[in-house]
Image 1 (tube, rainbow, N blue to C red):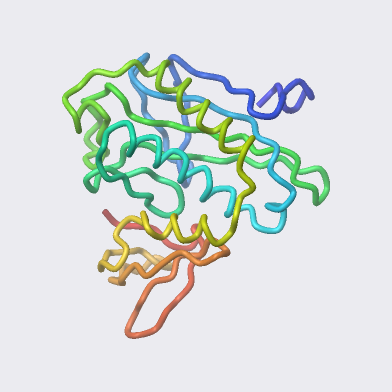
Image 2: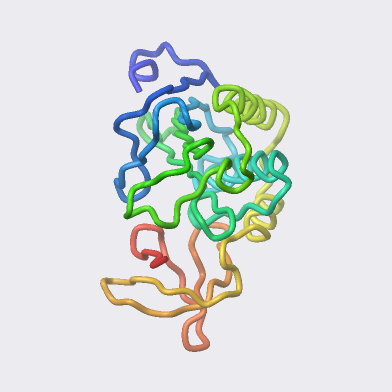
Length: 225
């Protein structure tokens, strides 16, 4: 983001996009968003010093803020699909993508991109597992107003909360998508079935396979949904 590169960004500044034409998701997948129908905004955050040794803790904290926002708004259950997608009724409603900026080994900034499907009800054929707030509730929402409210939640959380490792991991795993259930994954190019156990305090997904607990980084495993 140019403002960060130019030294003009401040902690918790946000930029909202009415129409995002080149949004990115995990694994460089495109994030498709109809003009004016969804939440697409970025927030610049200066991470707390306590997070320097564990960036995924920051990721989990952001995901929980977004999850709690949607759960309270809709009064329905919202899950976090590891590492940071938001799922409602087993369908993807949104996600978080974080770009980190370092100065040497010092983590200076995190650019947090948040996308949430709000009023969009039609998606491309390859997004059969996509949903939106409108699809789940049959209600219309004002995306810009929701973005402002979510930004305020982010602001309040980072201004008033000292991120606590134990609390974050307990709550993240409490809302973990498919926890305790068997799912299909692709690992090293091979499809396999495994039970989702938990996410550990380093952000690794723990799967139960043939009675053994195996740990995976996000880049070496892919969900098959």
